[in-house]
Structures are given as C-alpha cells and as structure tokens.
Length: 332
Image (cartoon, rainbow, N blue to C red; front, side, top):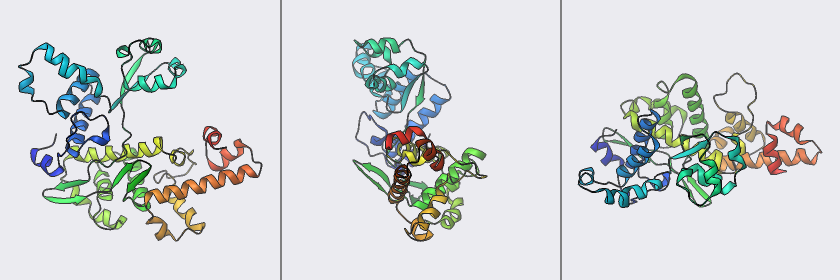
C-alpha cells in the first residue's frame, strides 16, 4: 500500500462517491484499486469480496461504524450497491455459444453476473456457461499526473479523452521509446527496465531519450506500488487506443519476421514517413502522438485504396501490408 504522506502528495481530491469508471478515480483511489486488484489476482478473495473491498475503500465508509449496523442496513446501503463496483473487471465466458447471443446482451453479460439479471432468457442460458473473472482496463486518462520522490515533484505525460478529442503531451519519439521498453520488460522482466520506463514518461522539460536515461536513478526509491500503477495506467491507455479507436488497425498488423521486435515497427514507420516528405526524422519524432497516429492511419488508408484501385485482391493486399482480411473487409 501507500503511506499517508504519499496519499497527501499524490492528491486525494475526488468527490465521486461511487466511481463507475476508471477515469473517475483520483490518483489515490487509482492506487488503492491497483492494490486491491493485486490481491485479487493472487486469489486471496473472490469477486464478491472484490466488489465489497472496492465499495468500502472508494466510498470512505467508516469500518467501525459498519460493525454497529444491523443486517437491514447492510442490505440497503451496501449489498444493493455492490454490483455498481464492476468497472475494473469483466466476466469471460468459455463457451462458443456465448457469441451466438444478442450483441447487447453480450455487452451486458461481460459486466454483470448473469444470475443477477432477471426476465432475460439469454441471461438464464449464459448462467450455465463456464466463466472466469478478468481485470478489465481500457483507460483513456492519465491517472497519476504527478509523482514524488521524497518531496521532489515530477510531472508526467498528459493524456485524456475529451469526447472526440484526445489531449496528450506524448510525442512520437517518447511513445516509440515507451513501447520499446515495454517489450524489453515483457522479454526480460520488469526489474531492470521499470525505472527507465518511468523516467521516459515523467521526463522533465522537453523529452529526449538521453534525458530519460540520465534520470533513471532518480526513480529507484519510488514506492513499487506506484511504479506498478504507472505501468498499469500506460498499458491500459494503450489498450484503449488499440481497442476503442480507429487506430487499432495500426497496432494489429501482422508482424514481419525480424530479429528484433522491440520497437513494434514504429521506428521503421518514422523513417517511412520522412521518406514521404512529411519532415526529417527529428521533426517527425517530435510530432504529437495523435498527429503521428493520424499520419500513420492516413498513409495506411491511402496504401489500401491505391492497391485496391490497381485491382489487387484482398488476399494480396493482406500479404503486402501485413493486414488481416477482417480489417480489410471493414475498409473496402
């Protein structure tokens, strides 16, 4: 967990009593949820206790007062609200018949226990399916804007979805570097790279790889729980970008066989964009992330349309551009 001092420094300023999304959490609430989920992943309690822990922690209920209440109060004030604490997990159904259900019902069942849904025949059917509970995190907001090592403040990247507009301070070079470090962490373990990961996202002033590397040692004493929260937050933002936006096609391209997969192809894309006259490497590297993704998306759409106009088959386009037929069917 985090200390009282860390809570004060991070900022517990939220007035939302019942958060229904990740984005409603303040920094302290976010770290609190992370700690609860780590215990849940370790299978220390079931999903019902997970909801109870989330409710009691996020609603600031005094646990001493709870002990003096009767069952009717529990039923009215707590049990009736537990099912609202479902924003951070989902039900996964291990049965092929689940995909045959109505799409709206599938969406409802992913966030709700089918046994709690009344007067819905499909929910009754789904209640017989084998299911597991998994953490559900596609977050469209930076939830730890500032971190403190001792009393030294480090401001991080800015990222927030505001309707149809994403406001972010991340630049292309910073994004590519972060993806590279994530790949290294996945391949070789987080311990040797997590401080570089944090230094990359909380780099003071104008970002550069050299500056991020120079600041690594400053973050070694940061609370491990906060470190994990920073990684979790960025990975969840990446999940949102790849799953909830049109840019998902950029991240789901089939990888070519190369010796190193660490940059996920984005370094090569920077060079490709410069070759098409959009600026030199330094200029493209300094592009705002959304401008960079938009440019990549436009170039990909242009390539698909040009190949389609040349009478190339979808199978040939798929092979040439490393795209799935499913994605091509959505475009052409």
